[in-house]
Length: 325
Ligand code: GTP
Ligand code: MG
Image 1 (cartoon, rainbow, N blue to C red):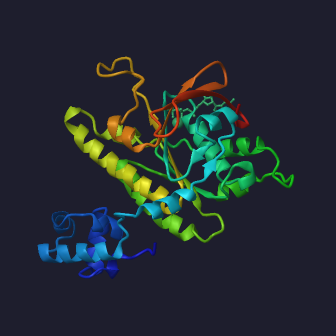
Image 2 (image 1 turned 45 degrees about the horizontal axis):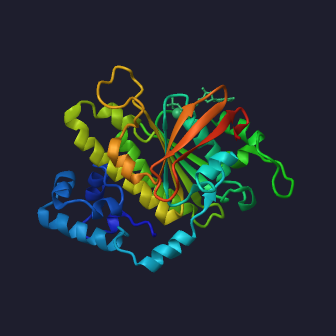
């Protein structure tokens, strides 16, 4: 998908483009799905101009839409599976974590969500023979928990390569692009600009095959408090997840997101082990995994509501060298 500038759209000069960006419309796609009223407010243009801009954006953007079954089948044939480092975890997932799908890891603090994310950021880069996809990674870090030092420890825990080669941490870090999201709107924008970054890397020999959002719900949860804000929150979260899904389809990438559970004993509503985000995330995630702590380094992953795999559990370990059986 060619990256188009807002300035290329009919009726958009530099000043209008600037106002649109300030209002958060920083891609042609975001304008294509906007309403004229939104643009009128954002860019101080007339209704007619707004409609013209949107029509131009719709023409220029690839906003998705209907696709014939044979094309979907073609795309599904490209689905890759990424080794988790644990045999039992892989088996639970039918061989590994699939591209073109959203995997949601939910669980209490310390259950290992961020550890799994770090391991996948490494494993996706491995050669096919080792269950990798020779791909790069984009991480949207909302809690400032990405640690290059942890990548280093886990790289040291990798088995030797197919030709017996050893691994360099720096090579892995070079192919992990991390951005911190400071609030939910910023997080949404980062997911949009991830598309541009992935476009640039498409022909790099190591295209993006994994996008991680850790945590996908924390900002939304913190910002939209109180019952009256729930619908608004779900709507935004829904849009964000669909952006991510589209990213996964267009780039043949895995979308890995983490989510807390409502662990506070003072919650009066609902099951304390239910994930935040409720139904929106429930229907969008293709694989939902509930992680919990067991003895010592052991962790239990339970597969919940998968469309084509039986529910079940896997035991794996989070060690200093990474995920193991
Ligand atoms: P929140 O983000 O707080 O919700 O938790 P999380 O699910 O992301 O937890 P995370 O993945 O950060 O897990 C932290 C746990 O991983 C620690 O409590 C340790 O049990 C384990 N862990 C982290 N680093 C190491 C390490 O170097 N060696 C070992 N053996 N375990 C580690
Ligand atoms: Mg975490």
